[in-house]
Image (cartoon, rainbow, N blue to C red):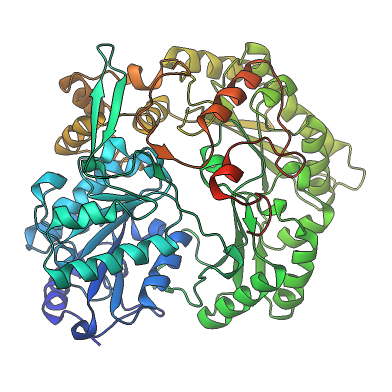
Length: 619
């Protein structure tokens, strides 16, 4: 099996001088190393953040295993080095390399980035530069490497359009292999990059930004998006129809060092039935599909036995929405209890929180439980279509308190559409009611006090949601709301944490930005912005300078209300949910009218028409 010995010698010279060198050497159990002579297509799978964060990502594990199952394809992992390592690499002329072979990724056929959050955009440019490649797609003229993006942020890829050759819109399992097969064919035929891109655009779910021209109105809004060279007028999101039999890794790369989520992870469902109007993931991952209980059990056993992990997490947007969640837990706990494996259930809804579910999570969540009411009053929860009540919250915390917990964390958002000061006061009232619920428990341990942690984030309007038309609240408005709740919160058992407005503002700008925003991203990167998701590296001043020097206003993208008929930067992307549905849901929000979840009643969101099959069933 192949490893670059020359690179290893170079690394040996300075790795002892950096923190956690195990991040940078590869060779972990479960990693795939192939004979380079027998490989036709090489794929560098890049996570634009640190090893500890990227190694926790399930999507990377799935696509890594899937591609490496093909004998003549080799997928390798790449992460952003921290500044101490990057400095040493540049000093010693070491280009960004993949962990399995230690080869520079500039020599690969594909450099693929998973784009999970907006604040990674400058890190992507830094990784391309560290790889010794031009960051602008137009300056990379040879057939390879093709720079490819995927993940949730690609539903509006326009701010990144200048840097990427192609984007994968939707679920990548089938799409990635089709693109790699196309490259294999193009390399054999001696095709040019332009020929590859035109053919790739014909694969369902592949978006080639260079094949679309954008024009703008005098007021700065998008005038038209025009496809050329036979590219589709709209790029339709790709989905995996047979989710129960979709590829699931039988092994994970087990890291040498601790990572954020160091455990086995099994995906139990995709999509969401709820329709919370602020939640992008709830719409872009539709349709809702779930695996059979026996499939989940088989995959759990396989992963735990192959990796040696003694904790397994069930992954989804809302695990408790699994149609037979208690039956699934009974099936799993027969195995996990017998083998002393902890079962973790993240993403729980308060209206589906039962004593049975509590029994399963209490063995691993000793420090506290987290619930997300999102808003402090029923009126505002109806506006955002959260479809939970205060009673749901209190019933859940009652179960937790009776089970011996005394710490609860509550997530809320500030700046939601139609929010008033009464809604802000309702946050504190709900927290007080949780405290009172603790003291209503006759079996509570004497001398033990409750604590409620309130987390306040700033609402970010995202594409492909009913709130994509809404303005983000201004900094002055958010600070006034934060000040109000801090003034009324006098109970020492309640603590409050707040998000930074400048971070939320930048996220909103990048989330709803058009292609012109790429110039500001480029300039911010040139000014030194990188790893913006980390407080210690984030420099909002440089971002402000970049936008100003580009003649762009952040407020235009973040704080402006958009009309229903405005052409959005992402209007040529079809994420299966219709624009008309988002308009209707926005109107219902402003009328305070809720929409039932998909299991209760189909809201005709457009998914069924697009996929030709029922949603909320195994399709």
